[in-house]
Amino acid sequence: MNDLAPRCFVCAARDWLAAGRVLRFEGGERRYALQCSHCGLLADADWSARNAPEHLAAALEEPRFRSDPAAPYGLDVYTLRTAATARRKRLHSLGPEQGQVLRHPHGELPAEAVLEELAASERAKNVALAILCREEEEGAAVAKAAALAPSFVEVIVFVDGPPGPPRTVDGVRVLSRPLDGDFAAQRNAAQDAARVSWVFQLDLDETVGVDILQFLDALAAVADTDGILSVGFRRRNFVDGQRADVYPDIQYRLNRREVRYAGRAHERPDLGGRWQRSFVALTGDIRHDLTRAHVLARSARYEALRPGEGRTHERDDLLRPYRG
Image 1 (cartoon, rainbow, N blue to C red):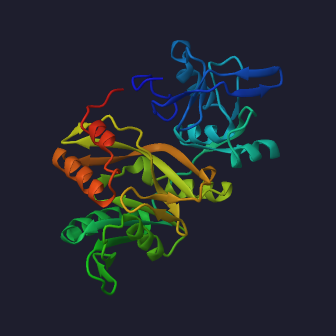
Image 2 (cartoon, one colour):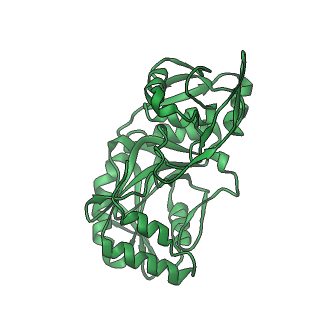
């Protein structure tokens, strides 16, 4: 489907694949025309005309989710886990077969699970916050970390600067090492600096609200139960205050401490090809504020670091106003 196709009604991606995937219900198999390349949602070609979003929303309000073969969409339990988080819920898979699909998606078994509310908490007791910044940004980064400190068990600012002993400024632990053009190495150093099992990494030009903060502990607990190493969140980009078309722009920022990032310029958690050990949470979005000048300069800088990886398509999408 083209880039103006309707967005997925679970994750908001616009990347639909011609699927032909099957779910096997008790009454027979059910084939779907489309599959979301991001979250794995299955759908009939006419889903938007058949109230699919409303049908799914109603089904997620029930204490027990049962896939409906008559619905214009389908999903396995792996995709259901992500869909449930949009309603601030978690799932408990029913039986070993559902558990197998949860660990090894995507399967042909229709999703069925018990749903319960995600537990909100004012402070994440098993999650550290890490913010990366340049040397001249240290003051702003410390202020940001201090403002977010009530939501985390510890807060760290990692400065691109000369190595030095750790310092504490306004209750924030400040560490320093040269970036040397390697963003993955800097994030890995921040991972290592944490004293708890999970790390939430945030950039200085990003903000998060209570819709993410209050569920970090619960999402980490879900991840531990399900053998997950990395949790992603959607990110809304704003360029000079105008929302950009890059969305959902998934950022895997909640990671177990032992997870390593890879990629000098476009760093991502390296799960060794085991994408099944990650999932996307939809409790809220990260906000990313940029300027047009920064977008243009960043693309040129990335191209200089890694020729051919300047992501000119992403630059163009960032400069294009959001299309719903």
